[in-house]
Image (cartoon, rainbow, N blue to C red; front, top):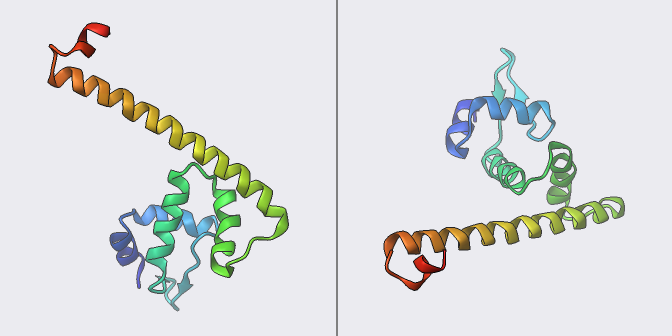
Amino acid sequence: MRIGEVAERAGVSVRALRYYEEQHLLPADRSAGGQRHYPESAVARVRLIQQLYAAGLTSTTVRDVLPCVDAGEVPPGLLDRLTAERALVDQRITDLLTVRNRLDDVIGVARNPDSDCAHEQ
């Protein structure tokens, strides 16, 4: 697949794909003319990269995690770091749930201004 097709199917920009290649997250073969060509699996890999970034992982951590995903095993030296990253993700989830609950309260008041919640504000 060419870069534009991967970008479209994965829902990212061509610029993002170039960045992923620079960061050694997404390898690409090159044609004689220098055009990038990706395997079919590139779309799933880009989506995984996006999920890992959305979870707050850095490029360095993502670069270290991807080979573990590919190999199905984690080197002992990386396990502690991944465990710490997972704890941070758990904290972000907790924080997001708290924000969602607060938004639900505000939305509830907006939809029903005469409720008891409106008077507790």
